[in-house]
Length: 521
Image (cartoon, rainbow, N blue to C red; front, side):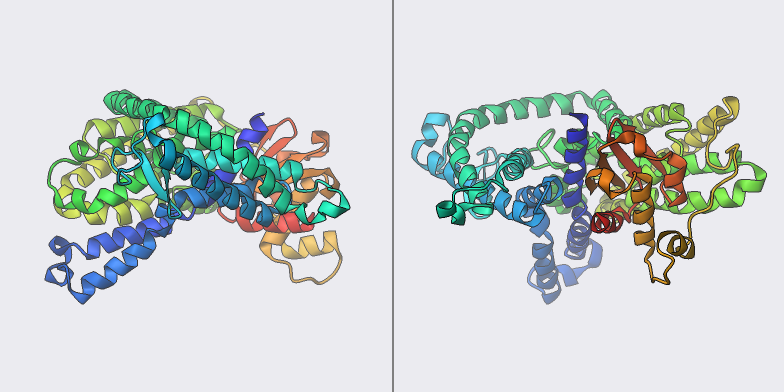
């Protein structure tokens, strides 16, 4: 079961990777149409204003169609075969469900406690999805329906029908089953979801009212679950909705950014929900402190090599908010440090919140600057200054605590290994080892080939997929999988092992490596 959850979480991250660019463009558009920041050129009606509003409209694409994005993205990531067809099927089934639900509410909405004549948005509980007026089941509904669609696809896509019914095989059969299932499911949703929306509203009020402790607990769970790959299930309901705000923190923040920026009222009063998006601060400030501790405790003869490992991993964490390449350099050799890291990350977020820092700080410096600091600088520079000062204090705390623990317990963090370091295979090494031919092999192909051999060859692979930084592989016989050191020869930061399920910590190039890996199968 844990393997299925991990695969699900990895698939969920794929569409989420598209949010960063669109969010930055939205923030830039909002800044450049604010007369307070850029002057009269940004007044409404000017060509400058009109141009950036057009750009802003395009940038909303990802967020306005987020449900469809997840329906398609999850299907691509979860389908065991014919992924493109699975995505098409999931989209058709999801739209069918919403058309059913819209028609049901149009006729019988009053019977379910829904006033379907209301305008969408606000407290109506309604939303337009692909032009369909329906209940706002949000990202949760999209995820559940996509998962159901993929299950139907995996079970029935290859179902052989009698020759006379051959035209209904494959995708047609999957959609037919989905059509039949969606009708009663739409009725059930009309009965249950309005009550669930009331429950969500109560939960939101509780979480926001829980204040500092709620922020601490949320951040701690988001960090401590990273080794399992289940942290997606912690942050997704908050960031993408509806744990503390119906549309999710990302969309709510961008929708209100112009208003937040122009209103001098402290942001903690305007958007207290933003306290649940402070977990990125540990990625920026904590990662720097961890790197300082590792470098300062490395053996003198390995400091230069340690620095060459730490610089890209730390920059990736600080700029993009992808921390796994750094965290997995010490997770397995010193799990105590990861627990301490989770405690410090939660304490940093809770401290920031107690000092009035809120916003959309779930990622790295690129998003900090583009989606928060620049738009907010005019009226909320004091909050930004407070955030930076507290963050740098925690950088020092991280460095001191990690250094103390590393030296006290003689932890084998990077640069303190007892054995000789094994070099990465070069292109020429792999050419000679694999084929003996003079092939022009890409670095991603080399790594994929190395990982495939480490897993015992293609005959031992049952399935392969990836999330943001991990190659996730399910093998048939785990005894054929080689030791971690072999994976590290090909650039892996570590390997998570759980029976037949493996996660190779690769880094941001994992998408390309996964494609090469699959091509080798």
